[in-house]
Image (cartoon, rainbow, N blue to C red):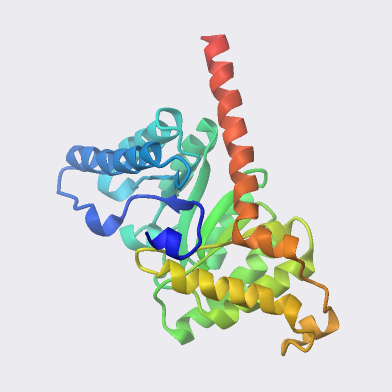
Length: 281
């Protein structure tokens, strides 16, 4: 219903950590998280034209070996193109050694690593995220929130600006814009559009539902993006100097096409990998 009201064709979905209650037993936690990932898979099977499924793993609750196993199974058995980790919520640095072990596993299986990347905790700082994405320059990464999250205005300000520059230094880094101040989202769009390819294809609109309202967020995204081409006297000087900077095609990219193209590339790679395994096996 929310997607219909918001005029959204498909949504990326992963398990909701607020609904995944862990125990003190890592093996039990593995079963709990696997069932949560299965729920996402079954939802996508029931609604293949509406839900894009993504996996979730947690090295703290599961331990490193089980965290790698669940990531591998999500990609190879369930066909998930993306595996997310949340260092902020699960309390580990984004550039810790255990992260690199899981990244190697995700990349080898053909998936895209995604991180909660916000200013809300010290575990996901720009300099630390840069160590990760620079280690794998040919691998696409997704930073969910582009430095957003639940941080205060003062705390978030530096992270927002550093994140914008971080993405311009590393073309393999994509950002989902959600849970972030609208004035910074505006600047993100303009900055990346001015940067040209491939950077203008590296931003995706998101709502962070159920924590964000899809209708509110995508209504705002559409209005903001359309205003870039409707008002030649736009208050940002960069729009005034480049009144034709945005087109209907570039706007369609930010509203979904950029993400769709990344998914197509990833699914094609997963299919090739599966075919190669069948041939060699």
